[in-house]
Image 1 (tube, rainbow, N blue to C red):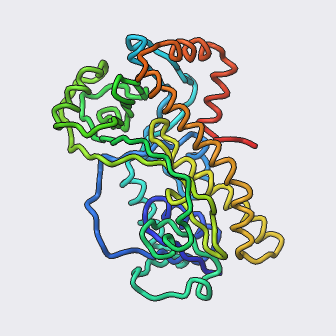
Image 2 (cartoon, rainbow, N blue to C red; image 1 turned 30 degrees about the vertical axis):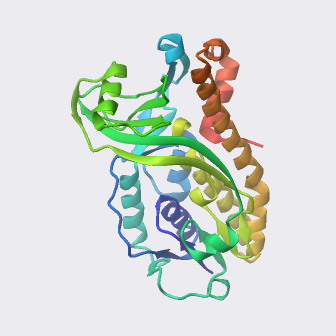
Image 3 (spheres, one colour; image 1 turned 180 degrees about the vertical axis):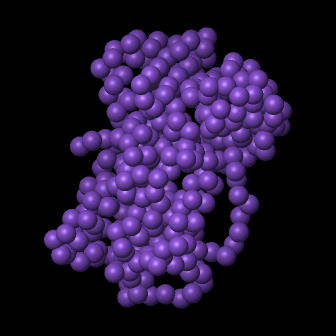
Length: 357
C-alpha cells in the first residue's frame, strides 16, 4: 500500500505522519522552490485535537502554549467584554508556531522507513503508481484540471501578523477585540511572547500604524520588541467536489476560512481524524484502500465542513455589519446570551470538537 501527497506544507506533513503511523508507505512530492520562512505565523489547536495528535500522530505537548481563557471585546461597547470562555481547572486551547510544528514532523518522518520525499519534477502516473493521492497543492496541473469548481468567499481583507516580545508574565489568556477597522487578536505563545493577528479591509500605510494600534489596545504587556511584520490576503473557499477517482483534495485546498476564530488547521485535523477512522475500519475488515475511501470521506465531511465554514463567515459578517452601521445592539445581544452557561458550553464544545453529527 503506497500513497502520494502533493505538497509539503503543514497539512501534508500532519497527514503523512498519521498515515505512516498506520504503516502505510507515503511519498510526499515537493517543489525545490524555497520560500522564506515566516516565523511569525502561529496556529491554534483545540484541546481535543492536541489529544488526537498525541494519540494518533505525535506528541506536541512540549511545543504548544496552553490557554485557559479566551476573552472577546468590542469597540462598540467601549471595550466591554462580550464573551468569556474559561476553564480554571484545565486548558481550552493552545497556540504553536507553525515552523516549530513543521520541524518536529519533518524530523520524525525522516527516520521512518514508510516515508519518502520526492522532487516534484519527477514524472509519475498517479493512477497507476499509487493506491491513493492526497492533493494539498494549489498550483499543480491536477488542481487546475479537477479541483477548479469551488465556492469562494472574498473577505476583501488583509491579515497582518507579528510577534511581540515582552516582560515575562503568566500569559494564558487569548484576547480578541473587534475594533472599528477589523478584528485584532493577542495570542500568547509563551510567557514572554505574544502573537498578533490583525485583519483589516485595507493595506496599512506603514508598520507604525500597526504598532500604534497594538499600543492602543495593549493592556497587559510591558513591550520590549516588535518583530518583523508580515501580511497576506484573506480569502475563503469550499470545494464543490472533494475527489476525482483516486485523488482526494485536502487541507487548505479543500476549505479555507477567516482566521478570526483560529479554526482553519483544526478543520484539517478533524478531517484527518475521520480519514483515520475510515482507513482503520477498512484495514480491520480486509478491504482495499481505494477510491471508495474518498467517496466515504466526502459523504462524511463535506456537509459538516461547509456548515462550519459558513458559521465562521456569519460571525465575521455579523461584526462587520455592526461596525458599518455603528450600532451596538448585536454586541449587547451576544453579551446577554453569553451569560447563559448552557449556551456558553455549547459554543465552547463546537470550538473544541467541531460539529458532532
